[in-house]
Length: 364
Image (cartoon, rainbow, N blue to C red; front, side, top):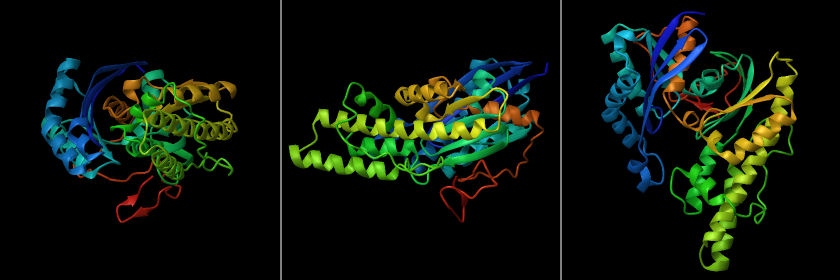
């Protein structure tokens, strides 16, 4: 494939305003720019992301982020082949902001518009970074989602299992709040857990006694709450060592659940007899080095290649959206100006949603 394709990607599904330019030249993949503007300071006092504040910040910042990405990439709108944008799932105000900006650019520059599933962006990141061939097994583990997927193509995903309640990223954030750590919780829990005792508290490993690849993390979070309360009652407060050991115990429990469920998912995947067996992990929790190292061990023990994106591409970014848009562009996908932002958008449409559905559609 000798054609050169250059795509602008826009991401605004949660609290990061992001834009990136990605180019494919034959088999070579290039991230020409990737700009991410976070909102941590705006939400810090609230203990989590406030959707209304996030949406307003996207509206105020996206044009600057997009301009920065184009300048850093040294391209003009006339150099682009298409504009790709996260069209869901996510906080609807933020998704709407990104979609409206993308539509304006598409009309003004007369470019094709491609609406991308945010989860597909994570799922296809190993294709951008490592040119991973289809089909591969993916553990998508992030702040809002956790599922095992066999990635068959740029718009073809088979779900093997997932969380039936909280995602690991959500559980990390809630655990951080419970033990007095700032947000975002994932990096903070990992930081204070280093060198602490993961065996001091006997936390459960939910659903390991059941077959299959489904997971649950809500009960683990409750166990942390009870252990914290016991520490507070015994010591008239939570000591720094209590905090560190609680974090380490929680992290170890999540690690063990993800490792065992990954082993089971790999067994199912290998039964398909893929030509080049590969197991990839993507999403924000993939940045946790303790969990990443354990998953790499599981993969090695199963004789399967392991792939994890660079840390900067684990968390939300627009390079993954640009790449997913590029693959879908090559497959012939085009969206019209009636592209609608979606708060919920499952990847595997053939299975019942893991987390239920309502008037707005399936969650995951």
